[in-house]
Length: 432
Ligand SMILES: N[C@@H](CCSC[C@H]1O[C@@H](n2cnc3c(=O)[nH]cnc32)[C@H](O)[C@@H]1O)C(=O)O
Ligand SMILES: [Zn+2]
Image (tube, rainbow, N blue to C red):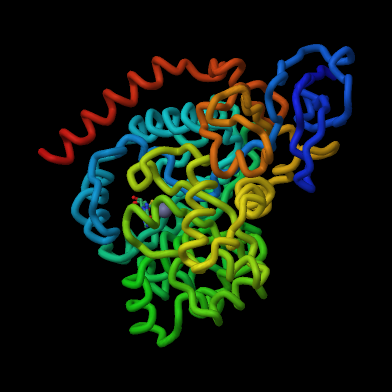
């Protein structure tokens, strides 16, 4: 067994108390062995956490990683126009090589800002899997399905692909990769396709991930077709369950919130994306009060426009107060829980907490900075004041992905160059 000690710093414990302690990791098993003072002398390798805070690696529970290539390509538009006029035409030109380049860029950005696990709904999942394997991250990946606007053969092929890639890649990269079936949204997939494929996916034990009630406009097609709210429709189709996690949940009525709570379906709040596309304000405090599991996500970089999850911690706390008209709503503690254990639970990973037996997914935040002085309350700092660039080291599955701000698993400069090139060629093809 080879061991790694993250030593000399303070540690955020699962109850959110802070203790001066070292974290000893079994690097082979990728698990935390112990959290206690003076463990460094026992370890084969040490990461210096002095002046820093060891936190669980953040979990970005909803996104489209390769959309980094479309960062800043089309801004300042509402969701439907943005998707239909700009994003979908560009995505029609996406090659597997583009997805490889864009996902590697996303991985570098996430590692640099302390994210160790993420969810990805996109195309060319084989390329996503390769990028995640190389980066050393943990991910729940899947192929997004859209059937509207497609003929029956193409629509069935799209859903069938979501199932087959989910079966093919589950457990890849030493188990760091898990999968899910990912119908894009209740209204972008026809009822008949859900009825055909959902039972097969359930039989294969695969979880589901989809966009739910992101904008007002997402509600009408389901109301017209099925006469119910989308959450009830999804429930009737067998889509809601403890292993399902949905993105957004912006426009939910109280019956839908109760249904999500009863089915133990997790909701990924994406505050920056919701603000940028003017989608609305999710009732996050109401969901927490009702017992809905809530996680945080960036969504794609084209609607954010970065993948620094610390931005979402702050945005969630800020927007949660506005939405509830209550400054006590979505406090710092709640935001940190959503970004750590909430995300790990939504994605079905045994992480999100620094304690013996948990997955060794962690980040060390450097606290020696003007904007983090003084240190009255470090949970407050994590939500309101820390930025991704304050992260000193990132560890996933017991492996060091970034040491002293140098990414070790990917060649950062080469990744940026490749992404720049792929992005300009993609946009040139789309506008041709
Ligand atoms: N196989 C599908 C692709 C679906 S991938 C998931 C899709 O979600 C899109 N997307 C990104 N962000 C959002 C969002 O906030 N709401 C809804 N869709 C989004 C993204 O651009 C991508 O097209 C097809 O043939 O079209
Ligand atoms: Zn999305």
